[in-house]
Length: 351
Image (cartoon, rainbow, N blue to C red; front, top):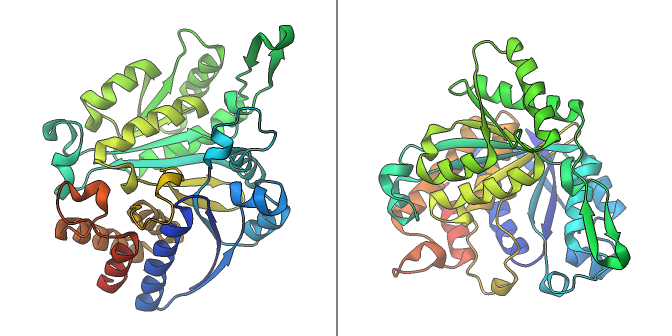
């Protein structure tokens, strides 16, 4: 198979972890007889520095012409520490999601047998955890009208959802549940928020189309609690943008490190694959960033093309590296810490 992949490395450790994912993906392509063309493009703080905007039109065109997008991370302290900055890297991420129609963020959370005791949660609570969040990405409070009143003394952010936005996200949730254990949880705050009541009534109306799926409805605060008590009681969860942003970060630490969790963003045009961690600017250039989440995001990318054996080969290599202690400092736990490049080299060689 010939694949054209847009490569958006971004800021901070983004380029370093992306380099390793490319290295491992190229090893897969060599092993299985594929051809990958990588097309780099700017986004985030580096794009602002270069051309003045965080998601240039040229980058958008490259993404549209590609079969998929592999994305690193964006963000820089000079923008984080300046709330008055008129242009910010994160604006590029939101614009990219909007322009590419990436309305469904797919965030799996699973455990690694060799790392069960590295989780902040007890082994007996997390063993067997394998859940997936589908977070709506292009609606809600992040995209609603916002502003200041009373000379800046009052601020507002409007949360708005349409039934169509809920339906298309929920449809993906139901379809995913059908391929797994046929359990779906709709996460909302319907006892307080009108948008959540729209979510709940819309999903309830869709249940008849998926009679094999058992659907539960839970308030977001209850889910936040249960995620650390009984995470393996969940399978597929769907929720709105803000709730999903918070809950998926909470779930990510179950595995023992945010540096291990991949994600995908799906939509109408092209799919994007990225690690869930941020740009971690303090580690830039130090060769200490964990590349495994980006490698596993690339595995999700291969599987999205129907190349399941290729994706599994990447997952197997990561598991072998973890078992062999070929890990970066976040997982070394007092043992030998390997560099970002060393881990990438080991994974590629193993494949």
